[in-house]
Length: 415
Image 1 (tube, rainbow, N blue to C red):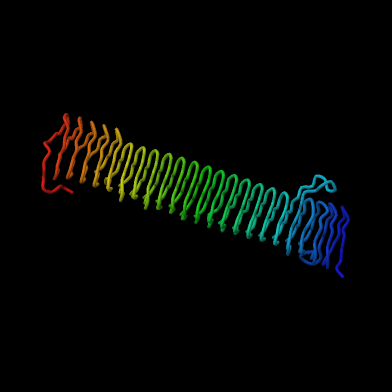
Image 2 (cartoon, rainbow, N blue to C red):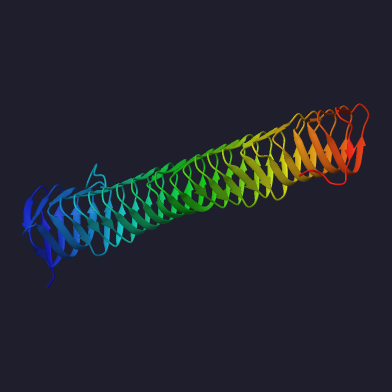
């Protein structure tokens, strides 16, 4: 017949194996038999308040109210459910502290869970905070407050209301954090963070959606990144689409599809895009810059700029080896340093460029250029060309256009 053993409140007692249930009174202390000491309960352990297990504990389930301290390992086959103390257990916060490792199928604690070694469970629901100093493995972890762990964590889903700090690599399918998140790299499927997200190691991801700022370190490979403020990468980045309200800083090279930034983009290496870049302010690339389509409201500085589609820049372009695209348009009072090669080039009013090679060139009012080479040209009023002008088909120049040298119609244009 199964046993039902009760330990009175404030009582120390030594136990070995219990074939049945164990009830432990408030502030009781349980010691185990054997070396190392351990208590094994085939049924459930009921804690009627705060209690201490000065040993390892293995049981079918651990239930109760108050604070439970296990000075060894905690092995629970089914459920750990610890609630806040009510009228019968006043001022007792629901908490479980394990100085060894912990395993369970279901963990449900109103306030706090701390584990000093490895932790494994299927589902975890803690109202306050979780602190684990070993590795962690679970299907789902739901924390109302904060989650901190020093070793690797593996889970299908982690949902944290406050902040999460994981010092080692992670393997998580979905990470949902209301405040800030810091991980040590690894693999995350979907990242959804209300505040800031930081990875201190190389990260592989499917998507990142962050309200504040993102900081990545090492070589990061993933899908789309959507950030309200700042995206900073200390290393190389491969991505799908980046949509950032403020600033993008990448110390290495970057390769992706599309880039949409409200403020500024800075890349320490090369920037390679298969789609479109749309930036409100400055784009600064230390290496080569390639894209299908470029739309920049401010300035571009790069070693070279190449686009299979159009380049539309409101301010200036500064390159070492030049700009090549299907079409290039420079806005009013813009400036281009370096040669331009395109099918169609439109230089806005009062803008200035150096050498232009194109099928069609249009200089709007009072624009200035050095050398122009095209099949067809339109030079509007007040424009100034201080070098040579060569064309193969037609030249239309309005009054007051200034040519330092007389335009020449040729059979073949220089390359």
